[in-house]
Length: 556
Picture (cartoon, rainbow, N blue to C red):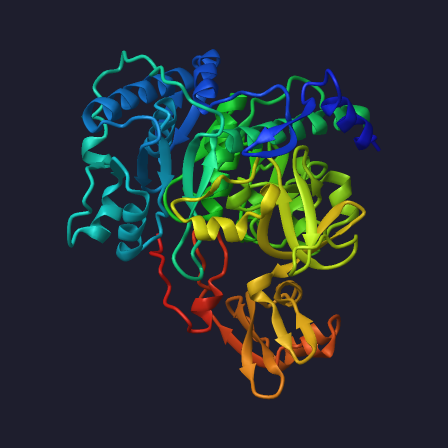
């Protein structure tokens, strides 16, 4: 087995391609990559070297890197000339995944403006809130979402993608704008999922997003060197890199990994319209010879359990990386079986919008040996576990996960109170997640808000949910707390049964009791056929399940 510590030291040490140095970031000293770009426009300009290689594949359209660059320059010219967009101004984007979304994002970056990804699943009231909150110079939106706010003006100029986008950008010979862009300038605002309260806009800077590109390039180099050390170098020339992107562009994974990282690496990206469809994903993987896929939420589960999964050739996929939801050991094994070429590279990461998508990563043999771990911190990322007073806890003790590094957001847009509550002194981010560190690896116990307090016992829903989903009759499950006069809370399970399944609540309770303590066995059950309500990134809306709120999202 490759000596990963030696490989990492070689990559990040003096003279290495990912050499680490300590610099000032927003008033705090921390490790950063010495060799790095300073702006996304610099990355965009560098993509000219990819020439006629395909960058975007969407339904019947194929756009090369060169054509993409021409389109971006044209849109940037139009945004500047027609709407007065300047450095620091917001350009809001509200649409399903499509090339125009990506082109608009890059056009904003070319101007030093701030691209705002509005949640495409929002209902009309949420859209109006988002537009008011980010105060953009212009809103670029598709017709379907504009219909949700057709009952009154939004108060900002609007470009409808279907009818106006191309006509607004006639100058195909425009050059990229030249404007000074600083490393800590805001680059994008992405809104938190808003499962409770109003969503907050996380401000990701130029530095943040490029730091994510840096750690992802580092991980790629680490895997290549580890494979070579283990003698796993494939025979013949490697396949061209091709990524299937099935997460929304208003989410960190879809935008920063799918659109930004893949442009930086010269990869082809394959996009699809509408709600996630596992069979369509399988078709695209086979047809486009996809090499990389980053499923979120339940996407991997739905693909590997699809009745026709064995009918498709998935041998081209050499990298599968997931996040956004706990992944059981059983599901990890099924992913390895469905994607045999990715067995050695399967990765599971932990991160959040506020730290630009990624903080820790478990992969390969280390994940196989420690399948419940979220992995070790990536270079430049520091992780601590702290108690309620902010005191760092020793290894093995459970507390709130704190993250620090150049990936941590600048703060929440125009919300200094929320920013101060989330970012402590010296730029430590309070994640709101509960976990522990063991031998340098992070273990996630549960979302703090999901914790069930039953008598004197803490109950973490995720372990009960994973146990239920291991039952052959259960398609998906959610566990919540319900009020109890004596105990404070009791455990309730909502299980979605497979079509034709006959499992009873008593049978499922007995199944849970086989491996979990008695106080964790649900006392209340709801067996249903309809799927659990989820947001666009696959997270279960538990406040909707318990009747505390209506589903604010519009299903695609």
